[in-house]
Length: 514
Image (cartoon, rainbow, N blue to C red; front, side):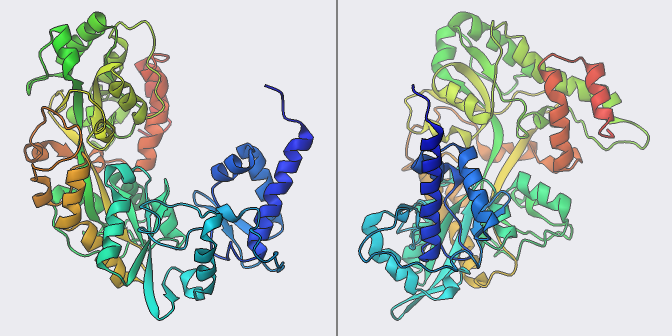
């Protein structure tokens, strides 16, 4: 492929800047709003992410936009202060990037950008009062609608059918419009005042509580029906207040390919399985079928802590004793390393995230994986015959409980409507929709018990979730904050890769004060 010349690249950068300046000056990108993502801009103008960033730096220098970490590029009050009138009827070069004015229903359940044939929608949005920019209300004709900004992790489109549920809420509440804001950092949107309602994982709640035990970012949420009190625990602040309403949850479980077990003549996982039982089965599956008998993204904060929990290990123990000197710690950490390296596979298992492992399982390249119900939603459209079992045990059968909840930003002007949205999404109707359309267990007990009309390819064998509650644990049970857990994980990567022994890894943990 011929290399693109510097002249061509500079022309594309100029085109990008001219388009954005036009949108800013003609009001299509308004103060307080956000530019399309750097990835979208790069794809549209055939530029690398680095080139896009350099171009945007010019707009920052001009005072037109400001960069907000983990959120995006925000238009400043000076963004369009030089008005330029475009030709009547002629679309500006970057019209396709103007944000859609409608809510969840208008977006078809997804956050999208307009095209040229939606000029009328754009003109209507220009007539909306300035309150729209703050997310409070929009008036079109005689109708006043409250705009609710819902920030959520993009995976929840698959794991909780969230856009469809938001559209259903709009249909039942014609006075409200739900603006969908998919982002990897929903709580960051709330911190910057860009979301009224936002999703919060148990891990994110732990990180927020590390910084602010009172969880002051989170306002009051309505009381909702939860299948078990443990679903509320991750969202309690230092005073015991429940600051988020549970939406979906999942224990970490074992998933296995039933055809692989049948072909290899291996008995399917039993309740009395230990991790050493799993290792024996994994070796046989690997040798017989030339697959990974067992796969896990061990660096995930949703995976390796399970082995500590099952071994009864806790970081903060007796005064004067270091955790890195505790044999129970190394017994816990040695096990997952052995599971990966003692399957006698000729190649190493290289994973970037949990999704890699789930994809390989779906493709038949792994017989067993350590996963969650969330991650198995990709199997709904497959023909794979699979089963789910509780995790094998070490000293105990403990597992890690993952919960995703809904929180309301403290100080939102739409607090009443936000509470109504949370009440709806956590109510029996919406939760039943989650149960029917996804594999994610809904937090509502009645919805979880639903057994009829379930869509897609479901597991042929699965544990009764209500029987797993006694074994469910949370991150906080390890008695360590999120930042330190992440630091521990970083220091253990060389150990799990067998590049360091326990003595060397212990020295690394000493530097963390453990």
